[in-house]
Amino acid sequence: MLFLLQFIRKLTLPGISLAFAGCCLLQCAVTNAQNQDTAAVQQQVHRHSARKATLYSAILPGLGQVYNQKYWKVPIIYGAGGAFAYYVGYNQLKYKKFRVANEIYQIDKTDGYTIIDGYSVHNSRLKAGMDYYRRYRDLSVLGVGAIYLLNIVDAMIDANFFYYDVSDDLSLQIQPVIMENTVMTATLGVGIRIVF
Image (tube, rainbow, N blue to C red; front, side, top):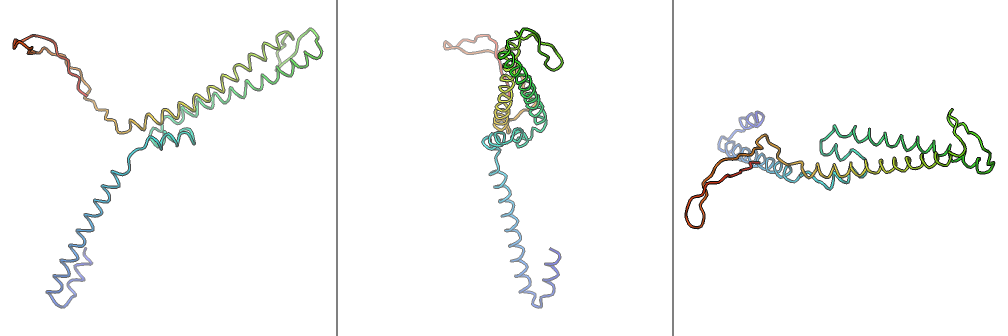
């Protein structure tokens, strides 16, 4: 703006310089108003999208929570998912050991004990151990899937409630009221008003 005023002073004809200054100031005012209108439109256009949050969480677990600005949920998602993934690997490893030992037992049919990870297991219990670890491996896989689905549902719900007003004025007021009935007589009662 200072540069503009110095430029106007250098013009030789005062009538032309005033007209030019008026046009420049008008142009600056119009441009400023357009910029404010554009900023207001851009703020209105950028609505928080539940579809985006859902898609982000489906692509990468926790990304929808970051989009919803619920950063504290990301370590919970990865902690629970990592724990279930660990148990999938652990139970799969144990299942393979019991399965191999059971296959050897089925070929030899010798009565005795087999040592698995430093523990002696009776050969008649190998099938039960194999079933045990297979069952918990499958449950751990279901746990990983459940964490993945809960992550997506949580991102979608948080995005839908992103603009939900949670104010401190949540109250319940119970007070006596006088109600009019159809025969125009007053009746005493209790009124309940819930304020959100």
